[in-house]
Length: 414
Image 1 (cartoon, rainbow, N blue to C red):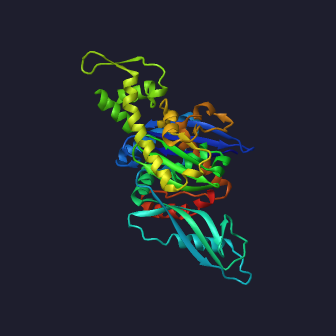
Image 2: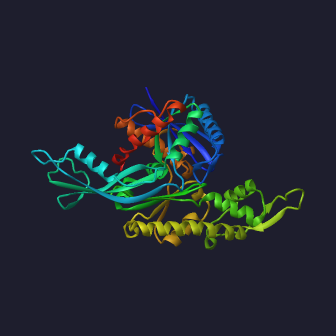
Image 3: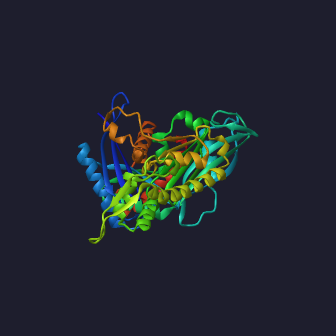
């Protein structure tokens, strides 16, 4: 019997549910993709429970109709500019007659790194070890079995608002679906589009969505830095709307159809006809003019990314350059502009490696997060980590507690 997995990407622009199965030969098949227009979210954070719940219900229903599967559990993504990350260190002593490090010692050390003062409205989402140091010897990535008296660890800690997690769970439960896990969206996207070799030599992943642009930096197989930038594709659309004096729907349409982010690479300068508003005459603009509206905002996003990469201190360790994904990366010229501003190799991140079902449809940067959430669920199932986060809204507080209990195990994924 096939196991069914569902990833739910709750974005600012769209809600996407990806349904997949794993066959007897561990082949992953995409059974269905459900999409709906996202409402009730601002910069990745739920701001209107009823509207967001309705968007989630619509996407899940669409996925059920396409896949023929009744969806009961989902792995949901979390993002938003409330996400913060920083480095921390911890230390423990090793007891026992043989002074050999055991998994319990590693767990104690991870708990020690979490002893930090946080505001009451924030919670730790991830604790990801960077490296372990045993008796002054650094560069150890799996200390279990190593002998020593003192063990230290440098970890990457990601925090988020408790209310943001609560609202995600509440909205999904209103759609009559259980939450089996919550995953930080840049981590999910990385699962879908990054190669093992890229993570080893050093790579930055930039997922440009509608409300946020998510950055994750990898080196030596481990995530080293994360950041969520509250400027993304919707700002580009808004600039077009304001600059041309047109409706938001029109601005989004011409962005996707005619938009270009890099003026030097714009081959044509064809005229674009915009329908008049309220019976007015149609307006004709040049494609070059549209590019002059889009490029400054894309430059702003990439300049913030450049500052984050510099802040990570890994700008000289990104041999594989940067991988672009997300719907915002589909603007023509985005890769050329990224290459110029960041001065490193650029590749488009497209989910691949699936055997059957909606394979062609899923090979699109806009589905990277949804696919990555499915892959995360499959990994956890293979490692024997399962469970639901809450059954009803009455158990919401207990559900949130179990979210954070499960989250402390995520470091094993990286």
